[in-house]
Image 1 (cartoon, rainbow, N blue to C red):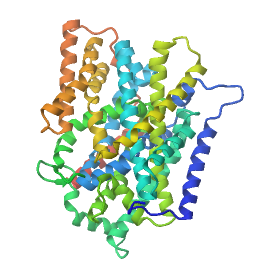
Image 2 (image 1 turned 60 degrees about the vertical axis):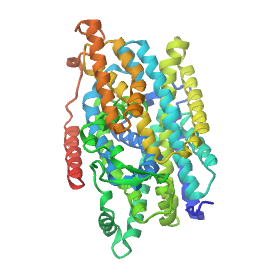
Image 3 (image 1 turned 180 degrees about the horizontal axis):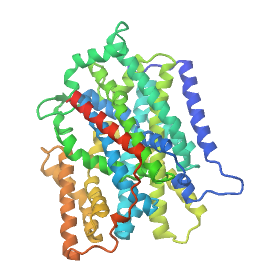
Length: 539
């Protein structure tokens, strides 16, 4: 057993077992259909388009927050500090942009998937290419990394074998989501987000209390931490300001991960707009909303939760750094802290929070991958006149196949240092070109299918070329450069093809309903104000 692992007491197992029973039971219960009625594609892939704002917001966060954040972002917090929280705080602002500008168009088009939108705006070639891109990213980047980091946490905390832990997480996610589809995922996420936020805050509270000593409490512990590790509480990092050692003992500049003001005005916008506005397993919740008003409010609710999350997923990593944790990998920081400082009973709840984050993301990715394969590839290119019941059956088979492949690949990530950065950089090979296609398709009437296709095809080669030819450029800045190159390609090719004429499939923005909801507007001003204050405080 690993030296950092701490055996669970009987009470911990009971608490964790109760959580497993509730999630699986709830997932199966909400998946039921009335007698004589079978699920159709809208039920399975879009939860019957019935989700209220609080279910949308909860499911967005539960799907987004996973081992990638609990383990990966805490690992980055251990190495580079609070600056990594920009991925959370800037995401809150990005959600408002998506809610106001992107969502009204998506919902008006009544789409199931992001590739389906691309066919409506461009053509079937763009749809097929992007569908294949997303399937590969979901299986070989997202699912595998979440499974690996979840398995790593169980290995460190409970001393379980890495392979067995990965397989167990995959089995749990499959048990409650495979039958019910998005409805099971979304409604269990309401419970999952309560568990992950509550249990996550508990871990931070206990860690800060231990750091500050019982006489000062968690607030005093945080104050002491900000003094002892002051260089880990800067949001904007400049070149040479913060050097750290990676797992191989090589000294690196944190600027390469978070390049100064680019986190506010540069490449992080490319990463966030792609993730929150063009990513099937995220935007699918909004597509399942009752209406536009509920969808926008759901994104605002999610944005408030994003502002809270660095306290849960970054601060523990900084505490582990200040405690000089005896760990070899940055991604071991959170499991080490959980095993060492969270007591009996509370450990079961805190670990349930971590597992809630993992399995909710796995279930979401499985469902979205199956949605893309079924609705974009199978129905379009294999069997156009397919029955609704067969679409659901194909969706289940594909979801199962995706999780099996990811389970086999996940252990191969064990040699990486900060898996969170691996996810960001290699997703960034695809995101600049894809975001350019969406932005120009949504808001520029002259963009042509051939221009979009070229942008999609060249996104990975361009990103790879910049990575290997200009390694001195931070990857967020490379993403921004590739995005602007992709936009320039779309503009140039479209003008050559169309001679400046509006494309027949262009979106008429004047016809798009925007819904002036005062509750959303007030919520949006609050989010912007809090985000600005956080950056002023931790500049």
